[in-house]
Structure formats: structure tokens, C-alpha cells
Amino acid sequence: MTELPEELPLSGITVVSVEQAVAAPFATRQLADLGARVIKVERPGGGDFARRYDTTVHGESSYFVWLNRSKESVTLDLKSDRGRQVLEQLLGGADVFVQNLAPGAAARMGLGADDLAERFPSLIPCSISGYGSSGPWAGRKAYDLLVQCQTGLVSLTGNEHGSARVGVSVADIAAGMYAYSGILTALFTRATTGVTRSVEVSLFEALAEWMNQPAYYTRYGGTQPPRIGTQHATIAPYGAYTAADGKDVLFSIQNEREWAALCERFLGLPGLVGDPRFATGPDRVAHREELNAIVAERFGRSDSGEVMKLLDEAGIANAGVNDIDEFVRHPVLSARDRWRDVRIPGGAVVPALLPPTDLAGTAPRMDAVPAAGEHTGSILAELGYSTADIDGMRADQVI
Image (cartoon, rainbow, N blue to C red; front, side):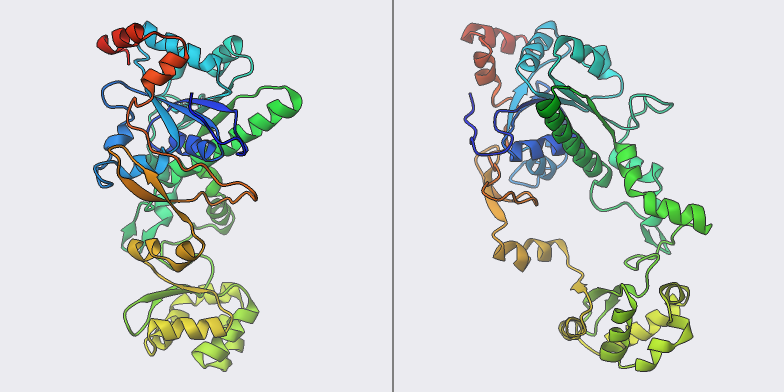
């Protein structure tokens, strides 16, 4: 059995996950970070298809390396009787079961919440779907960008030339975060009341929650926030402008004190403070083009370092618009010692960021990313299978 550190908050918790892609693996990786034993069930002959999204990390997928450290991988053919029998044995010793199978697949295999409650009363099932287990779209497949489109997010992202996908898998990430917090809540409820509750999260409803502000703005304002690139749709000035050296710097004005400081200490135009075109936040939004021209002209007279220095001195939040390489080399990450080495399949070691939540007195688990089926033999042996049994299942492609 895998030895886990005893001091982590979820030590002693076992999670079995029939997972793929992003949302479910993100939820379970965070449970593993906290010390849970996560047994990842994958397909024989290739495993989680996210392993093949790309090959950029020493031959491994960047998605898979990000989402699957500190897990144990078991390959099982869940369409076979013997594969399902092994899964049942795993669930018998588990605290949590997570699945993001295709619509209807879990129910057909007897892995729905109600069926599981009858067989495993203390097991917490968590289902992650595209549009929920009921309703007119329950049977539809859903991937991240489809959900970005359905929630209207894509219509807000981009500029006057067209809409754009958010550059990360934001619907998957939202669903994974809500699944993670839902599972923690269910574990707490079980521990304090003895009541076991199932968890259900859909990508659509997770991202819908994040769309509430533009939904209110549209419903009660009559029009939706415009697509304006790095500018904020409902606050001005709040956006990126190009300095004399060609680098973009973004800054934000949040209140009237900051507006006055910008005018007096950066723009050198104290008369703008009382200009009726810019007197209030809504006024500045209404006259955004005139205001942008004034700000852009001032930016064009200083390089980005000087711009950021002057904005800092005026007490105005700002940041250079980094590319990914600049992010990876960010001084905050290095100064705060946020990188740890993690082994990936094949033996290479790559840097991984610590989880963003620091719990005093503990260090998160940062173990290896498993190869597909790497732990199948040891886990089956743990369940009582002999070497001959295991060899037979491998020959029959059950594992």
C-alpha cells in the first residue's frame, strides 16, 4: 500500500475516480494535494485521453502533468465483468467516488448516486457532467469551449474584431473547483453528522455562476457589456496601454481618490478631476474613447518602467502585460519558493507550482505523475489477487 504522510488534512481518505480530461482530474488532484489517496481508473491500452492532448513535457501531455500528480493509476476495462468486479472492491474501501463519464454511462453501469448509496452507504459519490443529470440537455456531450459558448462567455471575450475563447479551460476549471469544494463539504458533513450526501456539478452551471455579473448588467441595463479587449467593460480607465518602449501596461482606477491621483500625479492634468465628462465612473465609461486618447498620449511619452514607477508612486494598481515566459520567471514565484520538482513518466523531473492555499504547519503532497496502469499490479495484490490472477487479467486485456 502507498505510504502517505500522516500530517496532511485528508490522510486516511481514499478517493476512487473514473476520470478523464480536465474537470474531474483537477478536483481529485487537489484532494491528493491534501493527502488523500487517489486511485485513478483508466482505460487499458492508453488510459485517460488527456495523456495524448500534446507531447510537450518530455513526451507527456502538459494537461496530464498538471492534473495528475500524486495519484495511483489502475487500468480496468469497465465493460467487462471482471473489471467491474475490481471497481466494486475498490469502492468498498473508498470514501469518495468521482466520475465524469459520458452522459448516461455511469447509470448504465450501476454507478449512479442512488445505486451506489444502496451498496455503499458511507461512500460520497461525485458526478461531473456537461449540463446536469436532468433537464433537456442531460444527454449532450459538453467540452470546455462548447460551454464557454453556451454561457455567453465567448461573446464577452475578444475585441471589436471578433469574439475569442478564454485562453485556459475555464469551464473545466470552474467545475473542478466546485466538485472539490463540494466533496470537502460532503466529507465534513459525514464526519460531523454521519449523513452521507452525493455531489453533482455540471460544467454549464459552474461557469453560469461566474457569469452572473454580466447577466445582471445585461438584464437590467438593456445591453450586454461590450467586447473591448484588455479594457474593462464597465469601469474606465481600466485596461492596457502601450508605453514608449512598446510594452503594454495595465492599470485600474477603482474610486474617485485614485482618479484624482491619476490626473494630478501621472497625467499632469489636474483640471480633468472636475471635468463633467469624467466626473463619475459611469461618465468615464460613457466617454471612454476621449479618456483613452488622453491616457494613450501620456503613455507614449515614457517607457514601461517609468510608467509603472509613476503609477506606483501615485498609489494606482498596475502591472505589465506578461507573456507566459515572463509569468514562469515571475519574481514572486521564485522569491516565495513556489516551485517543487515532480517526477513524470519516463523519469524526467519537472517544476510544478505549489497549490495556492497554504495551510499553516503542513506541506502539500507533490508526488509523481503516474504512468498509465503503473499501480495496477500492486493495487490488485492489495485487494487479494494472486500473481496468476493478475497475469490472467492482463492477458485478457481486463487491465
